[in-house]
Image (tube, rainbow, N blue to C red; front, side, top):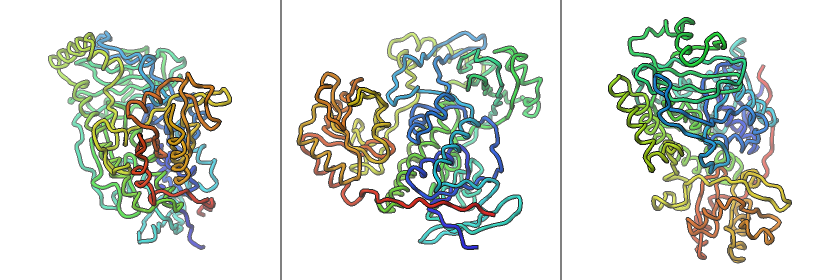
Length: 541
């Protein structure tokens, strides 16, 4: 049999691997996903996504598939052992700069099913379940992998240009590459309990801040709740999984007779980064590259950002629209970002999960005090504990952010905009895929001509933005900034136009006739994408 040939092999079809396959599918990249398990595992492991991760889900066109399955966090409480509220976050009043709830929860099997259904849209994306990459070698031209069907042990050779390891914390690909996970593992263990409920009540999300019980509780779906409870150092881990112990834990928060326990698993917290995320043509994504504590709910979000960062770069390189050096910016951009998220998650854990009666009570008293003060109270109510982290270096106009408040490297807002036909839409749905060039409300005709020219050179979409009070002058290809968010952004950064990357990070801006530097920095690096042939991979066997 002749060897199979694809552009990219993805190892692992968990949420990150499936998201990467959807993103590559949009770019016309011939992709083979190799998954060791013959069927979906059915376990709820990850449970939360932030607004950035929801935006990535939106970008692959699957909002209709899973949008109703995202369970938005409307109210977050910080509770002591007596279930008294120390502080609250009303997420219905928290700003939504990226077009989605700042936090939402989900049932992982449903999310994975939606992503796999999305993969099926693309004839050039194939999934081989019950298979594993037995071995692989690399050369200057690509990767040659031996892919084995686990049941029959029948193997085929697959040639690919690149390989993506999305095979989790115990990544076999990472081990074969000889890469270590560097960092720490917490001494404490947590018991993750998933229960099925017959009604959508009670609906609440809470950090447990008692001396006795610490952890997190939330509803993940209309028919499911999740308890993540930190176990005492002297608690028997095997006994903690037993039904009697599980029921005794959840009884403090609801009637255990009203729910059915679906799973109870013990796990440890890790704060680790792989020493390298790339070896030749093999890349690590998600838990294969990094592990982080759950206290900010960023583990899966970070994996989705990995996929969103790398997929468009692979699409351009494989399509001949960019040089392979663009791929060097993947780890450069994502590693620093993830490291900062891990540090923030560690800090949140140390504050919120402090044990011992004296320290926990002192911490709770401090939370109550800070909640009542104007500045710190606003910090808590607006949930600013999740840091906004721009890209400090990478594929940016100057390769590095010039100063702390520079626009390049920041994540661009996504308001709802009005269209010329009278309808409205979220901004990304108007922009579509690829690069985009936007001009500010009231931009001169010269600035608009320059933006149109730059967009043509990039093969990008040009979108003129009009202010809400000037809807009569909107161009046929433009949008109206009905929320005023885009106009405020342009004014804050004194910009006439902005170049957005496909992942909606800001590449750079220009204003006051200084387009030349921005244009020159892109010339030769990004070219219009040629049409790609979309082949189909045959199933092994």
